[in-house]
Figure (cartoon, rainbow, N blue to C red):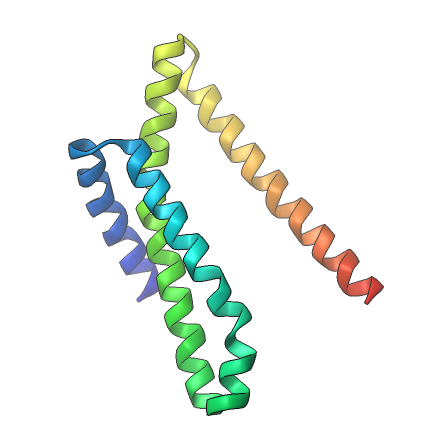
Length: 121
């Protein structure tokens, strides 16, 4: 369900980005992601207050909301990268490659920092 909603929200946000601007949709998707992240941190509180079933629903809704916000910001960000690369005279493929390599590095670095913090504590 979450992947379907991610793709559907990506399609809708791509159309809206054509109407409004890609930058506004990227900012909106990032704002939704920022709002969503504390939901995962609050899942322990939901578990202690309302029980396991409520915590399961809470986490499931948070994951679906997270995938939707990713879908909202993903298509416009790719359009924005392609547009800016074309305006600057650079290769769009190189810009996408740089973006993907930075995302991969960030994921690996974040996982390493989390593992180190877990090992220390």
